[in-house]
Length: 149
Image (cartoon, rainbow, N blue to C red; front, side, top):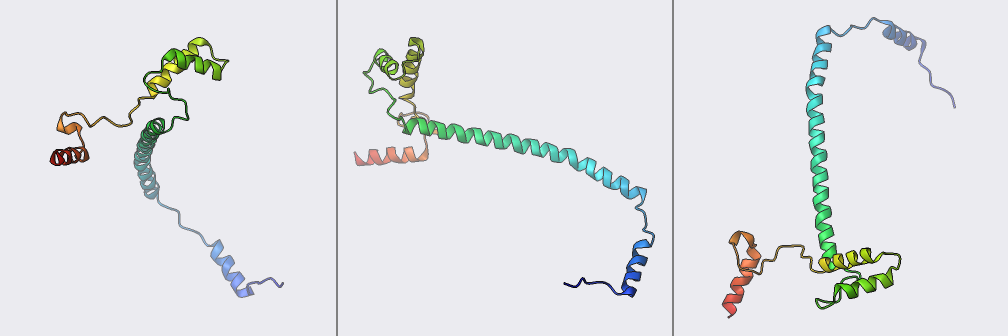
């Protein structure tokens, strides 16, 4: 392929334009630009910190919500059989399933399983109480029940 080249006149014009003196920016312009950068830089850094803090807080709240929902809806067959099963029975079952746990650790796990079996991911709204503690949906349900009786 043949390379494209400028004509001699255009090459001379390009050299002339490249060699001409360029005006220098004034000292006032330099101070103005540096002052603007200094004024905006700390504000942007502060906003970035707050955005990061808000993002971390939102992530923590989301994780907490999902973990509470997961503990309530999934038990993987590990929860105790019912309110009548004793902690000692659960402790023996844990020791059979995981023999490398010490008796203290298996008892601790049995207690934790018992505590986790009754987790409620939202407040109990079925009890009568202050109206501010009940959602609108719960109030509507109560009114429907009263009308049906």
